[in-house]
Length: 280
Image (cartoon, rainbow, N blue to C red; front, side, top):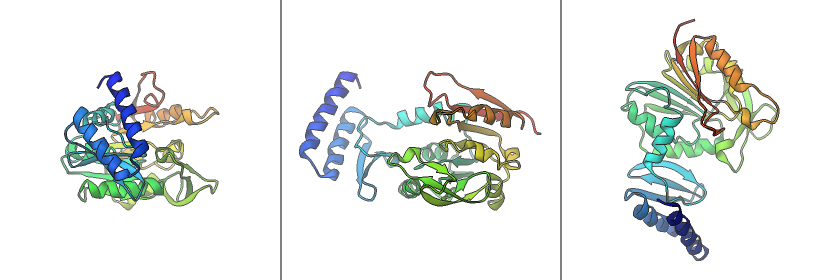
């Protein structure tokens, strides 16, 4: 879709929305536009519970946003998945994946299909707001028992942490200063033991700056990890945090080859990837 067409389409939709106040009608209008210009299998649905709009391709729900978006595509989301979470590791049938910071579960359909509905995905999310969306996302996509959902925080010690819920549900942050909502915390070692996990084919971590606490509680579980994709959120802090360098050193000292990327985009470049090359 070229820029001029997109700009004009947005103008028309904004004009229509000034008169159409019913959110479900807005969703139906955007669905028609998306089917016409993007893909005939696209659907936009308004969710009364969250006051947000789901993007759907055929029977697969993909994402939720505050505004109704028409120019989404399954291909675009899969390309994003491959550029980050699947950049260095090809997920295979029967894999065991720990998705730490699962959000609403936007990566689950891509894990699920590549695992061929075998293996297991442990989707862990500390934010209550995001977890409620994750539960609904899981239910609407008819995932089977191979995906389990866990409303906990993974930290450096067991107990309680707090999470500040913001209007940007994708950027809710964990803290230990009793700001926000309480959530149960476990170390990754404890979580692995509790669920009898003996191997982790892929550890994905996207937890908004709490990465250092996680590695402090995975002295045992790191030995089970074969591959990882971790977002190091140094860019969230004004002071120097050295999250990326600390994470790199931790995994290199535990037998991993660690790779960075350089695209010029600080969000994408925050990701590092690792593959086990020897046992320690």
